[in-house]
Length: 373
Image (tube, rainbow, N blue to C red; front, side, top):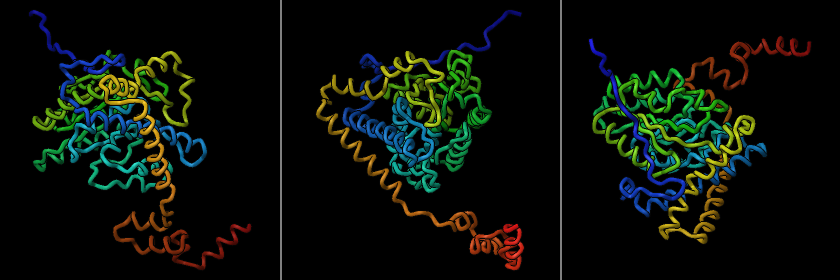
């Protein structure tokens, strides 16, 4: 019998505005109106300022570990810009720019990293799930949310974000397999920032692209310049049409870079070359966008100075709101765990003692004796 090809395919790489200022008019024309482009740039500058101030908060002991977003702003922002307000955004922990564009109050993110669980109490109107620190688990949640919308006959879709390292997790493969086989309208948005903490993508994935991991499940796969908000928007537009109109999942690999450390508990200088960081700094999405706006006569130094002041004031106000929130009651852990609090749990809450001591105060004497001994 002759040898025939079982499969032959390709993956498109999309780039519209590169780091040198070259703009592809054919692909980028009318994709993002100038008015929106200005708002998107201003938004990214504010989010970059949050990274700067959050780093100082952590170093001064006012906040716990924080994962900076700088260098990756165009990915989640471009996606959030293209999604409908009622589409789900299911994030991991480096999507601040997209979340804030959705209207999530900035202090929510600060409270989360300050250890205040109320930072994860997100109003339903934002259609955003809380930050997911465990690697890859949120992809299953997104698939379930999109499946539920499809079951109810709604046009709502879900977009979930994750890093290149998450594609090595079982949760990724289970979510992809489930979404592909059941025709679930979910967009899998991989932010390939070149590093899974200290493990480079070349070790994490031996294939030429991370995107082709999605091809095994028969879904459409795209790759784009993740520092080019036009390319992100172009891919998202195509993915949204496929998901909403055809109930098909789509895999997007946005090639970007984590300019900072993995978190404030990391020191990337121990495993990254300075030359590599410098190369990607030249591809910074903020620098790229500012250069483009200036070339169109839409931006100047005076506007930048005014924006920098606005960004400082905006983030400072968010920090004040995060730190001035009323101290939670110790009863909250009981009151918000049970719909109807069992009697023995109510006793623990009211006495702040173990169940047995709370129910039998005579045991207090034996406890005190043991402590004194």
